[in-house]
Length: 121
Length: 429
Image (cartoon, rainbow over all chains, first blue to last red; front, top):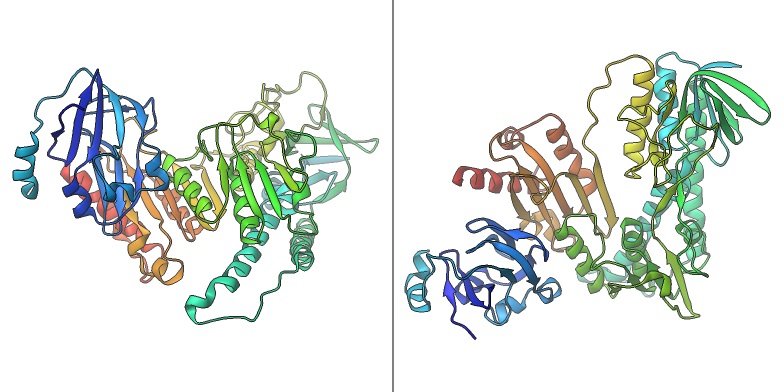
């Protein structure tokens, strides 16, 4: 499995063969609290770097999901439709969406950098 | 006999047009071959909302233990429920009949046909009218498999089916799934696509799907509905859409589209001047009673030579346990829009009543700050959405909507919450 990189919007990204996978970080799920609903695009939709591609509702708040890269959505983790709490259980195996993209975008952090900066983001 | 207006069809589009014409001092004749009130009053909106109400009360009775209220045994007499439903429908129909007669509208029971521009035939007699409005509505499409019933027949069942299998995933399917699941049926929905409510905002579709599943409704997706094999003990409802019902119309007077509906412009004008159409009979009709009523009224205003103006933004509602409503566009549909949501989990009235997850989502144009859409899933969504429709029709901005005060504690406060979240987002852009 390729390495994970992190955006300032608390999204992790990893890429294999032109497909990027997005998910939320452990820090994000902790701050959110119990996840009640995950709103994601459909396969075939386009996401744009820096723009909202969905949102996560928890008991406490509604948080927008900001895309770290642009591309066409190839796969959506539909298990999250009925069991959004999976994100609290394991935010790294329970990815959100996969997109077709040409490599990783710039401006992402390594795990070390993210962990040291996560509280200020 | 000569009239200013001849209306064919006594449903929402037809009777609304008749009242609108009578209010302008026009002489009106209305033809209806079945019962006044059309599908809405007799076989649609009214009876289903009654059943939803009654099923909701039964559901409350068996679940109010948490409020310290309990019963020895709650009985359900479906026969009595259906009788009550028929009483209510009958009384509304009587009221409508009285109102039509009170306004001097001539009502003729019979099957009318359009013989020519300005000429209607019924029961061997001819009627001349300067304006003709075709408002003959729609009917359930043929059952997808043999042995399946339509919603008309489901409403007449004397007993609650133990097992109900619904073919189709639109509003009719979802509402009946909710009703009969609350009444104790074991319900399954089978749909062709990847989820129910395909024409709706994805969040509403997924949320209602989840809500139904949590109540024990099974949802099968990606099905070939014509190949479904149902058990002998299953009642099968075919809810695959409705088709326009056309009266006899002399050739060449109106254009009929591929979907079987009459082609008309936003004022109901068909290809023949003086012949109009409104409601479910139109090609591409949204099949909403309130939209049909507006169309009937617009046609009359056009006949009267008035400036009709643009159509009001359509509103759609689902009454299934919690309600859902949609007006204007979703963020995904707009070219450049911003949206914000308020969860109902922090809404006091919601916590008091059901505690169920819901939301109010409002969409705005980030340049003009005007509200351009809203999607709601919450209690009383159907009563909350008119405020958003008014805002969209009048081009109100987020700040203009925020100016007004909404009572506390109310469900409508969530509109203020969503507007505040939206205002913050727009400021941050």
